Image (cartoon, rainbow, N blue to C red):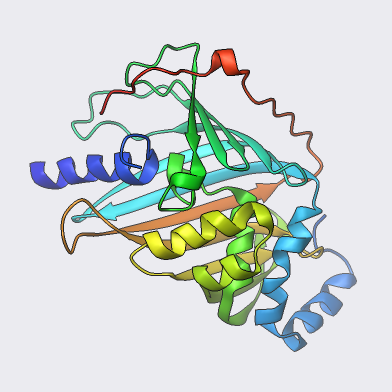
Length: 277
């Protein structure tokens, strides 16, 4: 059990924070939308979702990332806002307790930006008033799991690589009627079709993960916007033949909510050594 707990803690460090190693469907229109969804090609529908999200303005976001390794599961949760036009987000991310269950972590403030991830309250010897900047173009996971959060727009870009998909049916997410699709995307194919801001990260993830094939479930509202998306990633752990399964879930809601995100000034970014945890 102690060994499993140690490995679960390692999964959090590796998968969660790669710093050292690396409007609703309502009324009479719902029947028409459902008929359209049934008749449309699910693969083509999902490949176009990223374009819809790029013009979606802004929204609130809630994230959950669950990691399974050695029979032990850990979860990282976040909540905040995201601006799809500027590709900027701000979230408060809560790490799980240490394996012994005795240490409570302060929430980490994370800023998502093209090519960079900024974190405050990172710990590991970083002053409380300083930000840590991670160059996400150097990460082997393409910033899909770094920081315990999948960037909402990058999550949509993964769907550009949809290989197979089926329309499951109509359901509800947080009181909003949505269309549920289930399928599998290829990260390499997604990189080839992605926008400039996502092309490099997705290509890196295609090479860095244990498999470039990503099963997903996605729920779209009447405007074709993502209300919920769940990806299942797999990457190699710290030991040979040691695979870590990651399930990343993102909920998007309250579209139109202002997303004011200001990136740190250079003087507020920590330039010292970050201790290993």
